[in-house]
Image (cartoon, rainbow, N blue to C red; front, side):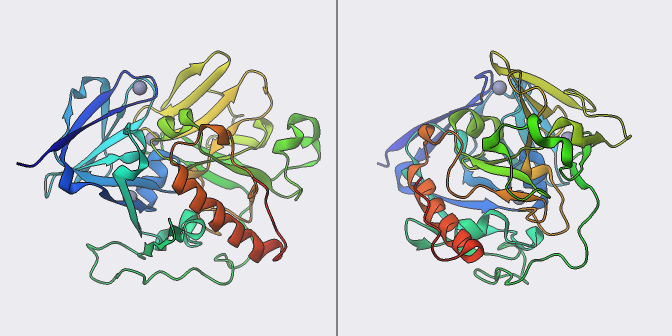
Length: 342
Ligand SMILES: [Zn+2]
Ligand SMILES: [Zn+2]
Ligand SMILES: [Zn+2]
């Protein structure tokens, strides 16, 4: 007789839930990190942690279904936007965004980075080459592509961009119901940003990695990223100034004085607004489409010595591996003496 485990998952607002019954022999779940542009622009993150699962028990009435391709439908909470499940028609295969499942991180075996090629710069895979000391296989595409094989992606040794950077940074969700442009910082940024979120490079915006529990659920991803421009430097696709809700955006107040926005059609996380910081905004990095690559390094200065809200760590071993990867990356940029204290 095989014993089974019941896994429960819920979204940020808890209106959407599902449960998954798995045989204990199938644990830990092989889990891949997908870096494809669909995953980046539907979640708003640099990649998505996906595990194939047996059919879940789920009442889909609280979800919005989004057909992100001919074969795949993604399901996110209609109230708060958390992406939880996707289903491929062809082979009737479900995947869960493993970051929303309750339980220890030992449920998951992080093994592969898929579709890294489209990131140009390696995206998050550059910071997570190993997990628990185990090398993560990096695929330019994915196992279904005969042209691609495990380990065939090689991180570029020079920046991916050629020629001058774009004048404005284009940002959009997968369905393009949300679209805007970010300009470079200019002289008037000064007092609009708190010192901790101000880049030392005056041509770039600051960006950080967030591993707090609320963002993990909002994005449906264990490792999230925010960029911190001022609102005055963002314009909408029609040239009008940025507003909190526009296009297909929906708003969810996750706590007093805080609003999170996401696309009501494709579910992409767009922004985090805090009433206490009216002149700036946190923008989901997965929406960005920089010439230089997914990390938008010619636009963003990444904070490599600290995570946002590190006290809420759930995926502790994963985060420990990320710290090592970030340190290695930063040493290559700022010199071998870089020694973050965390
Ligand atoms: Zn919800
Ligand atoms: Zn993907
Ligand atoms: Zn959208």
